[in-house]
Length: 342
Image 1 (cartoon, one colour):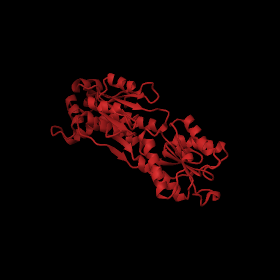
Image 2 (cartoon, rainbow, N blue to C red):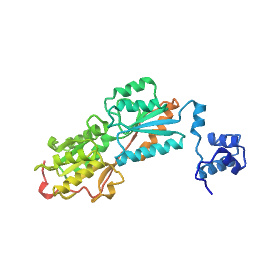
Image 3 (tube, rainbow, N blue to C red):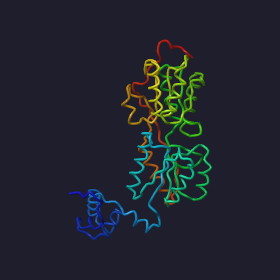
Image 4 (tube, rainbow, N blue to C red):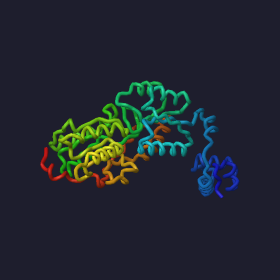
């Protein structure tokens, strides 16, 4: 019967019938010429079945590392960010690292929050709270602390990102192709790459289609529910409201759909809405939400892999994932009364 506790090298050795040092070598170097391939396979199978995990404390003594990585996240109330963190944490554990999390965007001093991670002797940082201009990241780079960015880009610093410019384009192109000309946007903060690039892609597509951007149909919002509701109300309560909205994430999209219902508007008959991230909630909405999908969990995993390579002193470069549009029932052609509007 499988134990609820991680197996030790001794446990695995006893089951396979080899010395613990053989188990250790097989797990560290599966291609070792000193161990028969079938023995290596058996050792790895038993280790997996019994939940073997490396002793991080013992490993830290050998490597002079803490075997801890720090993660800074803007917030954990966002479903997509929570999934990203969960994937990063699982990958870190697979590689023998513990994780320490700081949700720092609403902290009084975000830089101090990051410093607490460094004071805790973390071997490196995964930072998803970067702004377009982040002098603290430049200082961190000069200090030699290994770090990678996640989700939000900033300057030349390496990290794992979605192609936010292309994502903004996909959302706008979808609405233009449906026949919409009165298109608004609930964009994210302009000093953050996700908000800046998605809105830039949106503007590019409208310009290419010969559609003038009505600045009264654009609103900037933080990514929480209350500010999103206020931004959606400001745009949708206008008499000359848009027939479609591109939003910076699914939370903002859901807030916009709620405001639309309160104003007596039907989605998608009167208003089409496009979200971003394709969170778990997107397909459960009524109507189900059209959203730009980025591989949230794959991004979290990739960020840990990139950081571990940087900790080891390897040269690294950024990884960029391509988004795709997932069409559902929250978007449709504009109402007949808006046909031909420019």
